[in-house]
Amino acid sequence: MGERSPDTLVLSEANRDAATLMTGWRQWPGGAMALIGPPGSGKTHLALAWALEAGARQAAPTAAPEDAAAIFRESGGRVFIDDADGPHDEAMLWRTLDLARQEGGAVLLAGNAAPGLWPVGLPDLRSRLAALPVARLQEPDEALMEVLLRRVCREQFIRLSDDAAKYLALRLPRTYAAARAWAAALDLDLVKGARPVTLATARLTLRKTSAGGGYGES
Image (cartoon, rainbow, N blue to C red):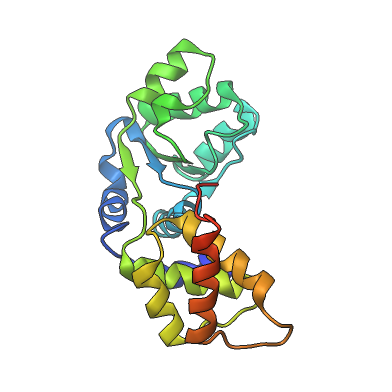
């Protein structure tokens, strides 16, 4: 799993409440929960940690209803569906949620927005999604921002010095989009082979990105 291994999960004020709700999966109302948060906020990471603890299996959001039902029964009713607000099979989502309610289970649906806003056509599914309890991931606090900056840099084979990580965590806008924008700008600025990123380099890229207005949501 690499960066998404449960061993690398960091809890902070931004995700602790959501993580606490997920530990109570045996008591989820109707046997289901929605995990939501901004893009890059670690939904998949947290969900995979939950799946390991609960013994859940993952089903694709576009899976056929009968395939998802088979996964549900093979896993004892514990199922994780990532990107459930993207392209999906509505009949499958309805079938899985109905099985969880009727037979008892723990179905975790992850998406960016509140489930009542997900694009669905079936009225019964829309009302079922709107009624789901929600575990919400917030934008990162300072502690999580530092971890996030290191992670996005590692994904681009860049090593961030301790001083640079702490400096940026204090000064960047506290959003996942800002961390990604800064890392992308840094990748363009770096001379090939210049590693690790020093505090001076971090400051320079921060000034350039701030001046260019590069912190919009993506």
